[in-house]
Length: 262
Image (cartoon, rainbow, N blue to C red; front, side):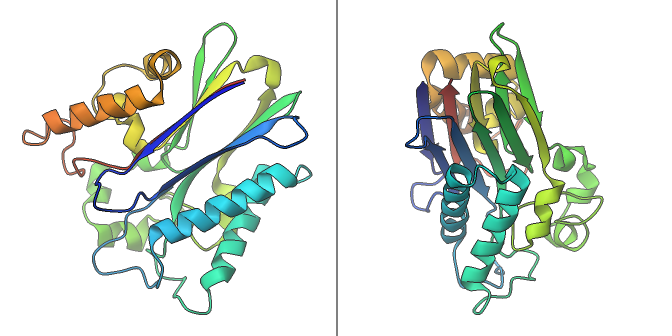
């Protein structure tokens, strides 16, 4: 098995809000990948005493432990329990009903000798490559399908779209959101390799249009996750002034890529 993981903050002066891990149980049977992209909070706060990295570290840690040890649990059950466990850790001190309480996108995948399960919530991406080379993206595209006018202001997003029916969903403080994730199971023999990516890394395809999902996967498989992040940084810097590709988006975003060859 080959694994490759790179995670880099968008700003060296700020903590990385992403979380990523690869779990390989001591039994040697199967494994898992956990990927979180913490949602950067607005300047007017979140109602929480804790930072987004605090949240992603605890949610990611809970997901890792439950995914490795809870083989009898489904991935939605694991996400639900992990969200509940994390919420309990700060429910007494923080306003968890605040629409910007710390939250994250989620990619979670687990494989055994026979099957590979996956869960995707919000705009991080999971790519699966079959033995014949076909790359299948697993995406939760609800945020991408919203009209641009609906995303005009953070206040509008919080009031009508964030974790609301007809909008999009993230892992925050409500365990029930796990039922909103994109999930599935495929035979293990149909997956040769996989890549999990936060939207800071998928900019190569989704923002800068340097290539499709297959081309992105080829880049990571051949040249490594570090190469993908470096290419994204070069493209972001080149577009810093013109903003032909980034538009209103911040110039640099936290970027994380995990590659696993089964």
